View (tube, rainbow, N blue to C red):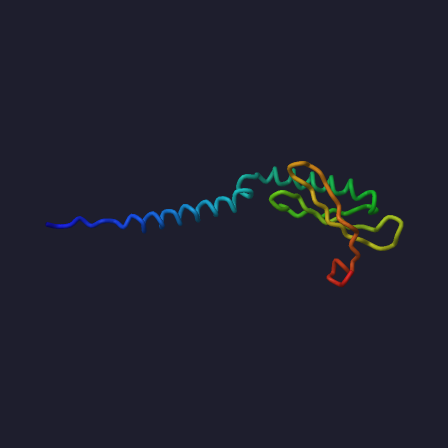
Length: 120
């Protein structure tokens, strides 16, 4: 009597599970990038720039905003640089824009020495 070859079910299941897991991880990692159009990213960058500049006007003369092109998953991020109001020094602040709540916060003024990596 000849035996029919049998597939080792546990081995196949583990291979299939590993492939599916890898596919889900890759899709999740690429998800935000693939799900957003160039126009949507540009719109977010404009919102971040406008919100950060408006908030910085209280502390920085003529603030220049440099927006991180994509930010993080939850936040738009930017650097705001300019001359500190009432002073001669130029400062840089980190600006954080909450994508969901559409709120903005500005970090403290960082001197050029701090931004370049010198001790505060």
